Structures are given as C-alpha cells and as structure tokens.
Image (tube, rainbow, N blue to C red; front, side, top):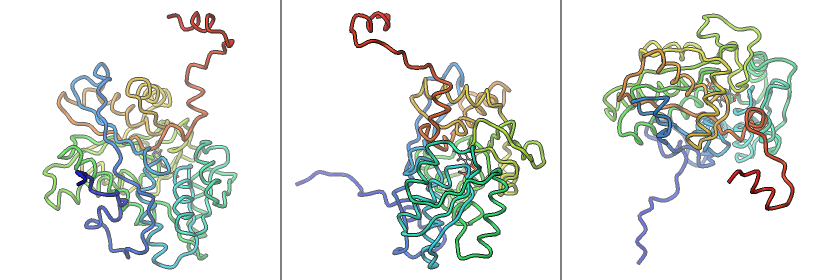
Length: 357
Ligand code: F0G
C-alpha cells in the first residue's frame, strides 16, 4: 500500500482560508493556486542584522510572481459570481499582470491602464501574453487610478484595484500564513508601501487571528516608502513621484487611512528609504540569501537595516519582511546593477585563465 502523507493539492487562499473570508460560491472560485509561499530565514546576514531573526516571506513565488494574486483570486471570484464579463485596473505593473492572468482563467476581458515608461518589462509582458487590452497612459499611476475609478462607476467593468474590498480580504491571508509558519506572530512586520493596500491587509489578517485566539500578540507594522514617493511619511500628496522602485512610484495612496491605522494601532512606523538604500538591500538579499526580489520589495529589507542602525530593533526580536515581487519582473534594473558577463573565446585555457582558478 502507498505510504503517502500528502494532504493533497493546495486549493488557493480563498478555499484554504474560507473560515476567515466573506461568503463566496464555491463554483465561482477562480484560482491559480496562489498562497502558501515560503518563509525563509535570512541566516547569512548576521553582520547586518545582529541578533534579530529575520524571515523573508517570498511572495514572488505566487503564480504571477507577486502578492497581488492573493487579492486577485478573490476579486475575480466575486466578479464572476456577480456575472461580470470584464475587469479593469490601474497599475504600476504587478496588479495588471495578476488581473490579466486571473481574467484569462475566468474567461473575462481585462483592461489595464499603466503609466507609459514606468512599468518593468516582465510585468508588461505578462499582461500582453494573457491577452489584456493594455493601455499606456501619458500620465502617472495616480492619474490612471482616477480614470479607472470613473470608468468602473459608469461602465459595466469591475474594478480590481485594492479599493475593491475583496482584494484586501484575499491579501490578508499572507498574515495567516506567517503566523502558521512561525507558530506565533512576529515582533515586527516590514513591508514596502505604495498604494497602501497590503499593509492594510496584513494588519487586518493579524487582528483577525488574534480575535480568533490563534495568536496571543500582534506585530508592530513597519511600512517603507521610497524617498521620492513618500506621501504618507511627508503627510501630503506627492504630485510627481520618482523612484527606481517603479512598483511603489505612487504619490496619492488609495488606502492611506488603512495604512495610518495599521501604523498607529500597532505602534509601528511608516518611514522612507532612498533609492540607494533600496538597491543596496536588493543586491544583498540576492547575493547573500539567494533570493531575487524586485527593487520595491527590497524596501522592506532596507527598512530593517535602517531601523537596526537606529537602535529600534533588539536582539531576539522576530522580524518578517515581505518580499512582494519576484526579481525577474524587472530584468532591466537587475542587469544595470550587476557585474556584467565576461566575453570569452571558446577556448578552455583562456577561460580557465579568466576564472582565476
Ligand atoms: N511591492 C510590489 C512589488 C508592488 O507591486 C506593490 C504595489 C507594492 C509593493 C506596494 O503595495 O500598493 O499595497 O502598498 N503595486 C501596485 C500595482 C500598485 O499596481 O502593481 P501596496
């Protein structure tokens, strides 16, 4: 007889966490198997982190390569349930990639508005491959989102930006997984902040697990914006946001209130890191931990480094960093900041010489 101990296929976050989700019709579920992403301890960076234990939540391992899939499965499921035939979103790239994939799975049309020239190559290629109508606007993300809101109000298309409440409901599942993998809540949870939906979602998830008696403490929520796109830190809208981390190049976050509540209720902070700090962290996790994330994701690690230096974190603290998207999303930035390949002749002796063995 077979001695298998497998529990079967992972059913995606809507079904796996159904007890904590708003009601849905099972036949309507649109899933690509999202969620259940690894939580990996950063064991090679003791010189940087000292005695704090840092765990990386690898959200780039979701089906379309970012955390957006957790929210998109639920938003598209509910759209299907309501009989929608098309979805629309504004995006810095990952939301559009995810919306396009889940719409394809659901047999729906997808319309995605992206800021021309500010979307990483991998993300754009995903939306195009999944057959979305990709509209590059001569404007920034904030302008695109305003237009999308108006279209969704007046035409028969469902908006799947994080203003759609099912997005946040789905994304909170990442906090559940962190608790289950650690066996408790972390002391601090660090993540990049752009439109501010994800920090809102994690905080909701942690609070729900605490209310259910599954965890006994809550983490402090630590959000990090890019210095050139830091409206929450500055306390006002940024008209022309700028950062190499295009995913979080946002000047007017839609979930501003949720982010502020997460910060204040948890006793955390929302701070900013420079592009140089982001790139240093981006390279460090790739070189030391074998984890290739996209630049925006590294804002969370840059945040840990900054807070460690400021003396806020103590030895023994458990810190989780969400690495929100996969490094392959943005090959151009990776190529720019890396050592270039060496051109060699097809000659073993010469190659060995170059290898300096
Ligand atoms: N990290 C990545 C890789 C992202 O794509 C985003 C947001 C964030 C962090 C910030 O998350 O908006 O919930 O605060 N990307 C959106 C998009 C805006 O259109 O793909 P947030």
